[in-house]
Image (cartoon, rainbow, N blue to C red):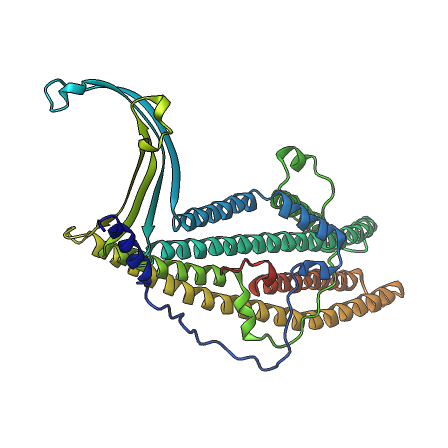
Amino acid sequence: MKRSLPILSLSILLGISGCSLAPELTVPTVQIPTSSTTEALHVKAQWWKDFHDEKLNALVHEALLNSDDLKLQALRVLKAKQAYGLSDAARYPTLSANAGASRIKLSDETYQHNRTEYSDHTLGLSLQYELDFWNKLEGQSEANWSAFLGTKAARDTLKNTLINDVVVAYFNLGSLNERIAVMDDTITTYEQSYAFREKQLKAGTINDLLANQAKAQFNNAKSTKASLLETKSLQENALAILVGKTPKALFEKESIEPNKLPTAIVIPKGIPSTLMENRPDIKEALENLKSKNALIGVEKSAYFPSISLTGSYGQQSQSLNNILQSTANKWSFGPTLNVPIFDFDRIKTRVNMSETDLKSALIGYELSVKKAYKEVSDALTRYNTAQSKLSFQAEELNAYTKMLNISTIRFDKGAANQLEVLDARKGMLNASLSLISTKQALLSSEAELFKALGGGWDASILINHE
């Protein structure tokens, strides 16, 4: 009858269902604007390919392959997954085998003095299992799972930022090349005008003021081009670093910039508010919230008894020849109970710390949602502004072009002086540069908008935790 007590105790303990001590998680609701239209904007995972620029596609691909930051984040994801696997494995029994052989000499002053020297050989199995009554192990596993998903989301955020930086840098180079091309034409024109003014000055038909004005225009154009070339070189270096080139490749780089800006993508009006739910940083904040909530239950479980089952079965014999005899069998089995009595509020303090972490995570989640809508709103504002400016500046450039044509015709007929032509060219130059800058701003705002919307995602690759 006595031998049945451990088995009976085990049956009773296993019959008791565990309960979670984690509080019920309530995700805060942040007031968000409602969309004025039901037209949904679908963000493709590879949205940058809609610009139809093969150089840009190749650069983004290279950046994703070579980025050291992404490689480090991938290792963090791997470590988080390993931590989850370790905590999940703790929920199951541990079975180990053991064997040993020893020669023992006892003191002659003990009650075993008649066996002061003997051999001991053992062979057996040992089992250890902690009963998870208060969901401590389950809670730790859930917390680590959420931490793993949060780390994956952080990797996606880093990936989206990298793609955006590469795309924007590429647009910057395209804009610089277009502006340099405009400056080349302008320098040639100013050089010809300056040479013509020099001839007029020598002939005495103009004064020094007009000659020096042409010289100043010529040198100003050359100075502007030099500044643009410097900016271009710095931007090339920045882009090379983004795509993960080595120092050798950086200083022996091939041409990686576009000759002109690509065509902007047409973005439909009306952004549904639910689109922001797929932003990786919001997912990261939500998983962090879940992880901190689960850890509260883990800490609270320390208030209650922990029960472990230990057992062993094996053989023990003084003689190695008899180690497998039935008479050498030995076994043990029974529960171990550990009950906290007084710990100077250590458990309470750890619980309070976990609750503080949860409050911080709640604020962090709300902040992430607010930040997401701000970034989308800012990107849309810049996009709409750039579109409006683009149409105005196109008309401005067209007007200055007509002014230049009229001034040139008048100058050729002797009805106008060279100064009118230079002014018209200067206006056309400034209008051209402004138009190029606005095109760049429009493209960059589109890239920022895609980044703000999450940059693309595929829900099917998200591992479902059963």
